Image (cartoon, rainbow, N blue to C red; front, side, top):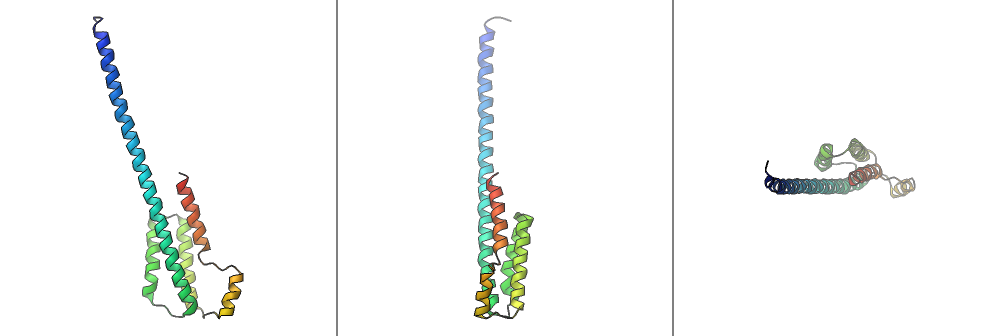
Length: 146
């Protein structure tokens, strides 16, 4: 092999290596950005879903405390939110949401408490959404630490 080919091959090898490394680093950066974007969308979506559930469950629980009868159509949105959670949430969150739904139905079926009974139950820290909120917080913290 002639000595004049060595510098030409070295230059070609260097430029090929530079091109390949540019392509690989660009691909890795885009992949990382896509993954971060997907993670952020998933996190935001779950946050929004949990917020909707808390709002709907709170409204229904308050309604159940003052009324003995509920129309099934009012419970549909709550169960639809639980169904959406079954797709994206952990088992802990789903179980807590189902317990909250059962508590709301049981509250509708129970006699309405008087204001004094309600005030007494508040001393016992009755919070129908506590377990659900804690399960959501654990899940969202585990997602953000990934």
